[in-house]
Every structure is written in C-alpha cells, then in structure tokens.
Amino acid sequence: MSQPVSYGGWQSEKSGFMGRLSGPGFAMVAGACVIALIPINLSSWRAALICGPISLFLLALAFGRVMGLSADEWIVLAVRHQIAVARKRNIFLSGAFAPRAARTGQQPMDLPGVLARLRILEAPDGLGGQLGISHDPVAGTYTGVCRVSFPGLALVDTDRQTSRVAAWAGFLRGFCTEDSPIVRISVHQRCLPDDGAALRSWTARHITADAPPAAVTALSDLMEGAGPAATARETYVSVTLSSARARLAIKGAGGGQVGAAAVLVRELHAMHGALSSASLQIVEWLSSRKLAATVRTAYDPEAQLMLATRDAAAETPGWNGAEAGVEPALAGPAAAEAGWGVYQHDGAWTVSYQVRTWPQAEVYATFLQPLLRPRQNARRSMSLVYEPLGPRRARQELAKEKAKRNSLRQLRAKTGRDESEDERREEQLARTQDAARAAGSGVVRLTAVLAVTVTEFAELETACAELQADAAASGLELRRMWGAQDTGFAAGALPLGQGLPDRRMGF
Image 1 (cartoon, rainbow, N blue to C red):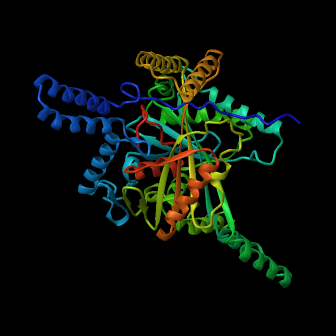
Image 2: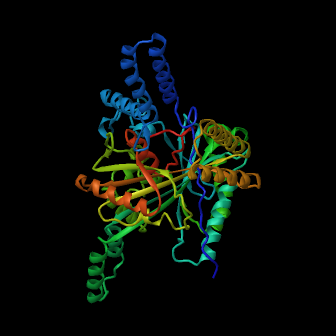
C-alpha cells in the first residue's frame, strides 16, 4: 500500500499599505515620527515630556496586536458597530412588520444585513424541473446551489483518497482561466442534531395493519432510543456566475435575468462530469422553495422538525398539503439582532469564526474532520469559499507578493536584523507556489468560515469552546468575527456562496 499523501503550503494573503502596516497604521507611524521631531526642533525638554508619550502611544497603536488585530482595526470595528447600534440597524424585524408591495399587496423576500439585496429567482433546469437562483443585483452575480452526497475519505484506502483529492483539485483548476464566467465555488456542510421525527413519520405511514405487534414495538423502541442520538449531515456546493464576465454569453442567450439563468444552467450541466470524477454525486439542484428552506432552517432551527415532517409527507402519493420547501418570501428570520460577539436570530444564537491560519505543518486529507464532529447541544456549519484566479491575475498577485518580500528583506539587511525561520519558510513557499503556477497549476483564493448555533443561550460558550478545541486539533487558528457576526452568519451558516472581499479585511 502506498504512503498517505500530505498537503500544505497555504499562503496568507497580505494587503498591508506598507509591509504589514495598514493605511491608518502607516499614518500613525508617520504622525509619531513627526511628533517625535518637534522637541528636537524646539530644543525643549518640556516639549519632549509631552510629545514623547504621545509618539510612543501612536507607535503602540500601529504595531500592537490584540487577538491578531491592530488597534486601528479594532477602532474601525467598534465605531462601525456602535453607529449601527445607535441607528438600530443591528436589529431586524420581518414577518408581520415587513412592508407589503404597493402593487401586489404581498410581502417581498425580506432578509437582514448583507443579504437584504438578494433575490431568489427560478429558471428551468433543462431537465424538466426548476432551479432556484440566488441573484445579487449589486454584485451582478447569479448562484445555483446543489445538494451533494460524498462517500468520504476516512474509510477508504490511500490511493482512493489521493485520486479523489486530485480530482477535486482538477475541478477547481478548470475554472482558473481568463475567460471563465464562474467567479466563486463554495462548499457548505452543516451537522445538526436529528431527533428522528421525519423517520418516525415515514414509518407510521408505511407500517401495514397486519405487521407483527412485537416487530412494531421493537422498531418503536429502537427509534425512540436512537433518534435523539442521531445527527444529520448536509453538504451543498454553490456555483456563482458573474454577469460582467459572461456578458457576451448572456446577450447571446437573450439578455437580462433570463439569459443569465440560461448561461448558469449551461455551466452547471457542463461540470457534472468533473464533480462525478471527484466522487461527488449530485442529489438535486435546489429549487427556489428548497433553497429558501435551507435558509429558513439556518435562521430558525426549530423549523427543521416541522419542515422535515411535512416534506416527508409531501412525497406520499395523494398528498394535498403544501409542497416541499418554503416560499422565498418566508426564507428570512422573523427577528434578528447582531451583537458585538453573537448573532441572535429567531430562537437561536450563533457565533461565527473565520479561519485565519491554516496548518503550518503538512497534514492529511482528513484534517478537517474534527470540525464537524456531531454534537447534541449545538449545530455546526462550515463554508469553504474558493475564488479561482486567472493566469494573468495570479501572476500579478504572486509577483506583488514577491516584490513585497524582497523589499522587506532589503530593509532587514539595512537595519541589521536577522531573517527568522518563519520568514524563510514563507519565502520558500512563495517560490514553490510561483513555480507550480508557471508549470500550469491554478491559483485560488480560499477562506473558511465556521458557525456554531445553539437554541439554549446557556450552552453557547460551551459549544464555542468545543469548536475551538476541535479546530486546534485540526491545526487551525480561529478568530471570532467581532463586530461582524451577521456577516459571518451569512457566509458560514448559509449555502448561498457569499464571497471574499476584494482585499483581506479584519473582522
């Protein structure tokens, strides 16, 4: 049997204005230098006693780090959050409070925060069904979501693990082209407690009248005992198309939203083979109602039981009730409030984390497995967001990183400071990555957002501590998304393919 393959080489994205200093940080350093020169120009010890502490304070704000963020980043977050609280923009009310449309008298789809601009459209999927599409008119993107099944990596041999990972890498590399209209691919997985209500409902409808009483009793006892200990795991893949990149194709397909939907459906059909080669089996492309249901159950975990029972009943022949899923107008929460470190929505509380540091050592393909370990007191979700880069942009980004590292090396040489092992390792990784790009490999931007949700506030901190412990076991460094919990929820708890910012931002 061949040896297991290990993986590594993740590069942190740098976006400092100069070196590792942000724009405000650089301004603080410049201000500190100017203030430090004032006593020299005045030849005054009294001025030195005043300007010296001020200069040192500005330098501490610029270079100091608290939980991985600089002082200016904390200040921006705190000011932005307090403005939202003062204007009550952190509170969202929907349901009976949502305004009705003047023409139709119906309540439109009402989502909070960064999701307020989204619209759920519906288009033919080319196979006789309907495809739900999440449309962002501001960013000009159209996103389709499918539910997939995956046999996993833990219980297969090494060769099969390696081939599946390589097939997924090949799938992503296929979008690292200059003319690819696909700008984002997201993988969303969530693990939630399952009390077995849908299974019991299905069993009750299918037990025949002549079934042996002893068998019925044994089956009922089994479901009652195993149901509360069961967990359900759902995996979604979302594909986002940019209307700007696919402008000509959309125009050829009729233009507007209809043309964009047709181009997206064509792209989705084209990737079926590549997904199958990575052992990802598409269970279904979500319709608008089922897409809305995934959003609804994330905001209101208590609705999971009701929807699962009703959806199971909807599959019964002769069912005259509501069809499976949820109306898009009811996808959002009835009420939500974004706090400094927690997001409250309907009857649940969620804390979101961003993966800020990936494992420094080489890891195996199953290193993320502890993150979605079943928990009875909480539901967990994780979103991996991939943004493929075209060859031209990848070359520019890597050249920019190389230029920054060279300038920092020259600065260290002039100041007589030795180069640390971490800096040598980062430089070697950058060279390896650039060589792989030149040899034809693709480059993607990657981020991961984790969310943990509880329905009892007293269990929240315990669930957060368990998640951080599991992340540490995976070699990850998490950072709580202070002051941006609503944005973190949209990215980490929903399979809507919310993307990366143009430049890395601190949360």
